Image (cartoon, rainbow, N blue to C red):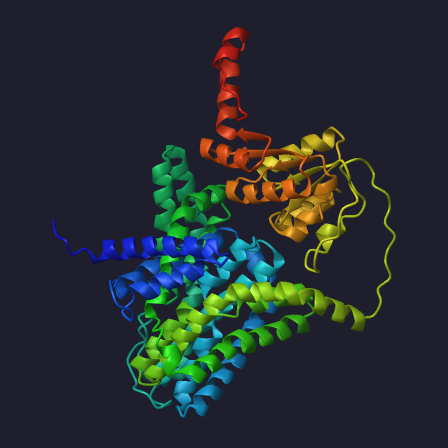
Length: 596
């Protein structure tokens, strides 16, 4: 058996060190991705000791990008994408132009050519897919309006970068570089076609891909999923999901010149129309998480920590363009379109970093003799530092938001408040301001007391909520999905919009005056955080949670949950009662209790 196994060594070293340093970062209340980046620096070529295979690491990271974008597509319908086109398309274009101009200005100060400035500026203008999506997922914003705008903005940026990748080789000679026959492997278009020929063919191929996905993919992909689901094989279903995600992404890149990430996004978006999309998302989640970690490790491998000394002020200037320049541009654009300050701040923080497309552009620019190697080093340093600082940007906007909203309120014309009627019955309210003010800051605190707080209103929470409503028991719901919030509003059920793990959101549910907390969400780790927060606010509150394993039951019980219902046990109890219904004494002996 050969001992030269670079693929295994890269995966083991990358994931192993990422776990160690991610755990340390989490211990010191630092985002784990900082630990992943440190792990990449340690296994990279710029530090002593073991050196992982950078080429393999980049390819593994690309799988992570594909799976992550596929997962986003599963929760992002075509209707959602079209609903934000009015802000995402012009906003992304203007922001790309502004950031490119700033980058070109810095390049001019460094004495580079016009072509170098163009490549450098474009590389600084596009945000990282992985970083943006991870940030939105951690805050459960993917399905909110702010999340849809950010993702739509990102899709427009990706399309613009695909166009740039095929145009640069054709323009290299004009810009002072070395003209080549084709681009970065996405498309192979001879430079003799001319600029407009290249643009026309590129747009035609992208349009052809979209048409194929909407016409053919919309029928074929759901049919495949339903066929495999009827086989009853979970293993085959999981394999089908991964094969579709990776296959569509790879085919899109090779046949249509669309980026792997964009191809995977469309595959997920088409699959989302199937009733099995929720299961598909669950099956691909573990691999998405593992490979997205390898993305951060691969970025860390590219970074030379000694460049912070040799290129001090250019790195700071590059970082300022990414973190400050792009953020201010995005903030101004979103506010100019009439969106709330909270939305503008979220978009600004989400885009205040660069990533994978920036690296591709940098490598292409160096290969075309347009960008000096110093430019590539600055882009890598800017990417690393902006990714590390991105979580701090979100903390900063949480601090800035109240001040900006108070300032905006002082300058805005007064708005006449409408009278609010009394609640119609327990568990229902005439005003659902918490659901309609989702984008405008912290939700108002409920006036309910002695009520139940229901966390999550999905398949389980919806049934619980209906039962509470039928029993005329007072309750409110904490939920962050826009569609669910709209349904709650239509049903006149009081709801607090946001993630219950957030202190302000949970405080709005008045846990001090509540009698019961019901956790209907399937995530045991997030539920554990909420249990701790509830116990701190109200030691006497009765906490009921759900779990899917004995380990989750023990975890939640250890954190203070009074009752934990495990779904599998309830299914078993239902089956036993049905089989032994005529023999109650056997039922009592056989049925295992559902509460641990």
